[in-house]
Amino acid sequence: VVTIDRQSLRARMAPELPEGLVAHIDRVVALARTLAERHGLDVERVATAAQGHDLLRAVPPAELLARAEERLMAIDPVERADPLLLHGPVGAEELRERFGVQDRLVLDAVRWHTTGHPDFPPEAWAVFVADKIEPDKVAHEPRLAEAARLAERSLHAAALAYLDLLLHQAAEGRWRLHPLAVLARNALLDRLAIEGAGRG
Ligand SMILES: [Fe+2]
Ligand SMILES: [Fe+2]
Image 1 (cartoon, protein in one colour):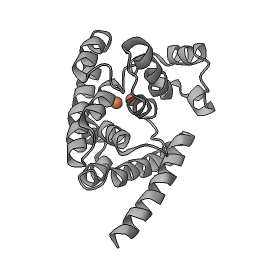
Image 2 (cartoon, rainbow, N blue to C red):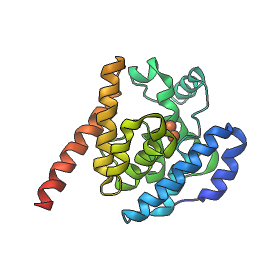
Image 3 (cartoon, helix red, strand yellow):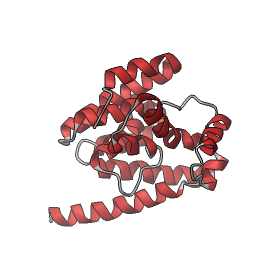
């Protein structure tokens, strides 16, 4: 049950977010809506998750870590080294606590929007993909164009293309990979093998 609609959530979030972040979220909502319509998904739940996804994106890393510790959340070593990764997990908790969002699908889509999750339903992949391929991000990273192209046909294929790119970037930059990104990528490979076989 969604207890707050996307417009009310936007109105309540906007005063605490920098302008650039509000603009990013608006682009993600618009694109997530389009993807949800195209793929026959629950448009309103996708839009609500897209609206809430970056509630805490502008909160400083040390503060995110403190809020996660306060809530006794399980913190992966990769998150401890790079606490910005906690803006989704802590953000989902605050959407529930502060704005009364109860919908598990919405909260989980927000919680894991940075890494993806092996058990994501299509609605959560729509939010994930929209966040990665919104126009500004493609303009800054031309290698995202492939994921953007694939999103018209398959959200799973688009998400996999993004995670493949992330894998390359992690190797190039010698960054750690979040374990959930690896698990999500493995699950997408399995999913696409099944979908490919089905297409025969
Ligand atoms: Fe984010
Ligand atoms: Fe985002």
